[in-house]
Length: 207
Image (cartoon, rainbow, N blue to C red):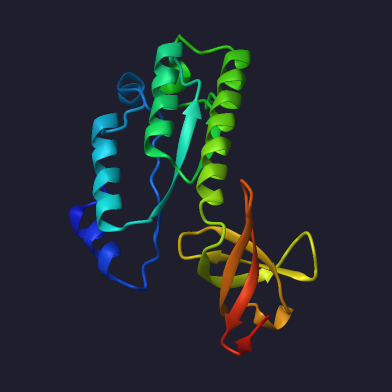
């Protein structure tokens, strides 16, 4: 309901708005979406994604998905996996359903066993990691503007930043560039980050 045609149009035409959107799905099953009190169907969700990608080519999409909501059958879960494949998310925050006292869902009688929830979550994570790696691998060789955010947690000789599509990039660079915009060529891809080589920044060219 918040992703109006006007908002999509603004994302397409305003340079200050980056090409990334977090659009929670929660489930790919209409039956489960209804039980969750979500006011959309899988078909409506797919149409919004189609509109987004037509208006903002190359936009990256991330999402939230819950595995093992009360009453979720294997067929319902398969519909979620199907949606993940069809949409091709760049990344997803995935969770096992957790019973929260005081909520309507906590009072439902068809709670799933922990083992089933965990097994479904593992299958969901495996699928999403495969898709994420495929998408990130397609960026290798490309050159992207990156906002340098901080020194890498893994190496004091590396910086990390984000592209306009919210991809994390790690590269060798002096720490003085934190806070700057730089251009980086992508050399390697992983599920969680890209590794690159800095090409230029506001203070010069790096070779």
